[in-house]
Image (cartoon, rainbow, N blue to C red; front, side, top):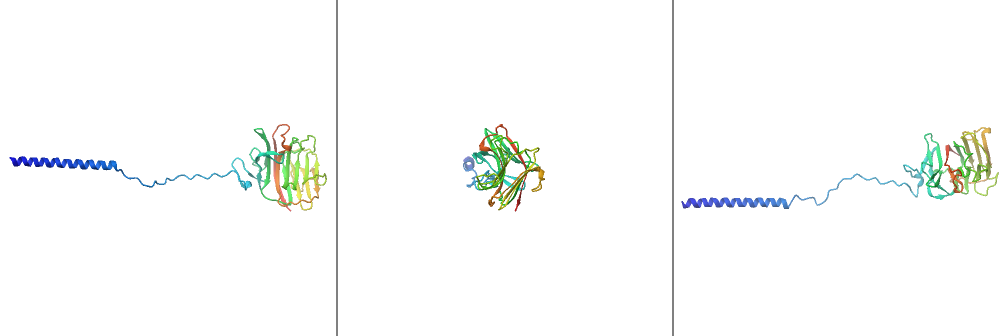
Length: 289
């Protein structure tokens, strides 16, 4: 009997001991996975990102003629040439005036014709000026205009010219220079002083239509000017259509000169009638000599 009791006690003790070991093991395992989770990498992986495009500058202090923007181009293509378009927020000569390269002031239409405008924005009158990026030199500079140039407001000036500096400049200009009853056509060889019949020819004219042709031929010995009613290739206008011609024998070097077109206000004075001004240029041609 005692042996059976001892055997039962031994079996019971073994069962108790076995149960305790299992509980301890289970508790150890749970604590291990709770306190020591799966480790994370010591180096954070690189996350791919979409590259950000570097902004394109809208202006360049060294090469303004090569820069363009989507809404206001510093250059414009017209009649086979790239032209730099003046743009300032401070008054600059001639005038002085404010100058704008806004599409409100300078643009080329679907026919390839150039439009220049003088406009008022926020109380400021903005003018338009273009310069060929290419140096031209001696030769014939020809302009076909598709707007009347005889009835400008007295303060408006249209310039069709070649220029390097104030002593190397040939001008065809239409303006009354602030005087309502003044002559409105001018051929000029710079620099001053202006002597009628030598380096300047002033004339008065009236048009019956919008189309006129203007050119000057510049060589080392002389400059010949001509304006005519209608659009004609250089040197082919009928005699009856010629508005004015003039030859100056003043010698001026054409080295490094460029073609220019501008529409501006004399002395920076606004149009006396308060209205904006538009001029259309059908074409520009340069024939090298």
